[in-house]
Image 1 (cartoon, rainbow, N blue to C red):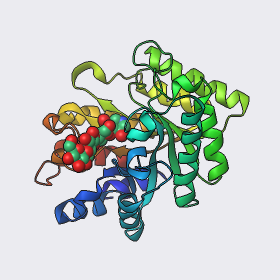
Image 2 (image 1 turned 90 degrees about the vertical axis):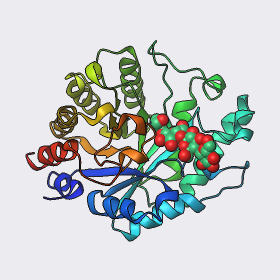
Image 3 (image 1 turned 90 degrees about the horizontal axis):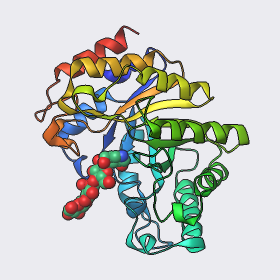
Image 4 (image 1 turned 30 degrees about the vertical axis):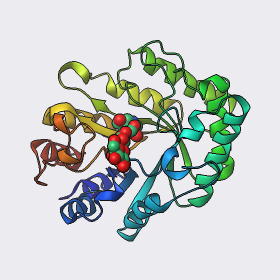
Length: 301
Ligand code: G3I
């Protein structure tokens, strides 16, 4: 196959990208995105601050621009994200305790109702673990009680029973890291107690040099063995090493329940860390060596 999406589809997987609503008028951007990708994540537009800027008043203007563009072009949408310590609107930042807990529940219900039956995968909870200890990250949500994550998942299941519900985080790629083990233990606990969780998103923000470790494949297969889908949800690699990109793709392809890969932007110039040139297309929209490495890996699956 000659595009990333079609190449991934040969093994029943998707290949996606993050999209920004404010770039949908850029024809170079939309041409590449439409040609290459078949799964779309809103880079910012479905986050809490964007969708509920005032408490109880939902705004889906920009989220729907992305959703509609995707669907009109035959693509699916990953929902990102419903409960997160970051990008909370001011009103939510100032809440605590039971008022915050209820606001989280109301937010999940409000957003999932708008997209009910339309979003195959939702990142229900994002980045809830501490970077170093393997325990929970401190946040206003965490201070509402350790059960906030399972409450979020139970709320989400009831709100849209057809959506697959994901936990999404970064720096859970290396199997030996405490953070990876912390998330793994939470998912194992949720599965054993019947808390509804269907998938784990490994964001995949890799730095250059030693950051990628070949035990990534062990991480993917270990999560999958718990009975959840795994996706690489926000892939970018500092410097865009073609070898590293190919290794990552091959690690996903090696595990049946690794359902797809999303890169976190189209061109280097679109990236949240554009100075690291981490994506598959350069700032002029040209395919980079990493693009060819990814396409070949997908075609060789
Ligand atoms: O839209 C406003 C604009 O009106 C304002 O003038 C400008 C001034 O700062 O800010 C603009 O908003 C920025 C927004 O991106 C859109 O460009 C925010 O400041 C900026 O914080 C925001 O950054 C996003 C970041 O999440 C926020 O946490 C990045 O685009 C986005 O790529 C990044 O994505 C996250 C994932 O959601 C979760 N995992 C990590 C990943 C990378 O940080």
